[in-house]
Length: 631
Image 1 (cartoon, one colour):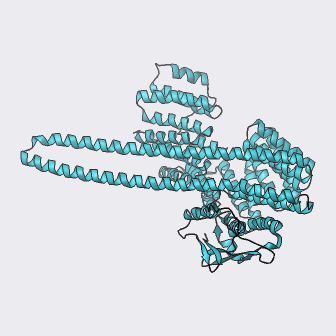
Image 2: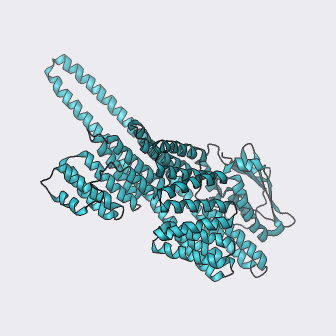
Image 3: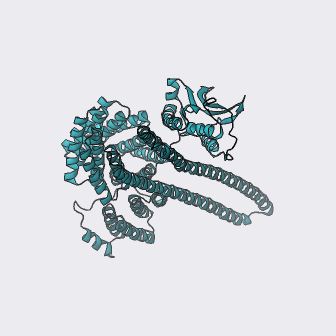
């Protein structure tokens, strides 16, 4: 909803013809060829903009008619406005790569337009829209770049409302990156401007954003203070959806404070409002959130009722992420009540939906690569066009020099030839450097793709090994089997949640490793031992790549013999700003040839993050791996 609001807010200044837009009269104006071109094109612009949020395809058809007409009359400004509408329809449909390409074309058209008072406002609006798309795609740095471009233009114009909007967008990017200090800085800048303008809707949004930052920091009193400020303003504005969101946020704070009765009370109030106004996406989310709360209180019938409501509503509105979370809620609840068949059924649905979302993410990444390719081709084409213009200019100069005497002509020709040769040499030098940079980028992208492929191989490989252990354990010790399942679930959830993150705290990785060691101890009992010698402060200060310790411990177990008399001991400690994993070498007599996949995965991932290399090799009868610690 915020994204749609911001797109409307910076919509290139399309003036509203009347409070109630009469589509029929606008259509008549467009079809009346006796009217001025500007009047006709304004009419179809209004029709396209007003319809696209409810029917993007129809909005796109009208905007393309507008674009054809603008190209026919040679008006760059209206070409840019039409392209902006088309780009927004792509955005609303989730076709981000197509939207970005179209917005780039709109920028070119608006930049080439002359004599327009609102030129900077229009260009700033497109920068804002591109920033919103990059944020939706998870490209934080690119989103920040375009929001800052928008901010610079709005500051030149002195538009306080647009500046406050840009501050909040920049704060949102920093909030996505968990940079609480920077997010709070920009939210407070936006809030100060909104106070000065008495912009109460904007103030309510900023209060909510600041409350989110305090909640992320665990400052619950401050979070409640700002959420309540947002609630008071929403009530004053009679904004029922805003009231529902503020109530839900307050309920979340009380949940973190372990006050379930208060938390449930606020969330129920939020749901009552959402049910009345029919806000389906938020309502589906509130249902399963409330279901988890009841499950935590062991009120399983109520939890099942709410999670089923969330699942049904999510399927009706095709909200895949919410449907996945509702299945997880039902899985956890049925598991807690001992209904294992139903729990398994919903767990399978959860996994299927999660796989579908991951495929969508892969498709989105391919769209990003295609967009980058198109931008590169456009850039090369523009460079060639510039060189062609330069050559034509040189030819014109040569023609003019024919009126001079022979000596002067000879001197000018020699000079021009020298300049042309130098320009050509510089051109090819720049072109060579550009292609070298492109090659390095492609090599880096290939390395990232290879690492992503290795990450996806961890899950099934580890799961199948664990299930093999569980199959032999379940008939021997039921209690231990249940503990095994819980640790396996915790471990596998960590793999799913952390596999796409670049780094995690050492403490987070150690907590995960304890679950893995629990499984190994069940399998090998006293034949295996892990010794961890780390200071508490270091575990919270340093970061490493996810799954690093698990892969290194797994390698040690895979390649070395172990027995009760000579157990395999793996040591983990810090030395010279490196995390060291060490075990004595006692290789198995019969083992499969090592592919080196796990260790190579670690080395390749650290290559992208640190200039300090990963060192691995034999030292005094022990196999030692030194991994650089990140901050």
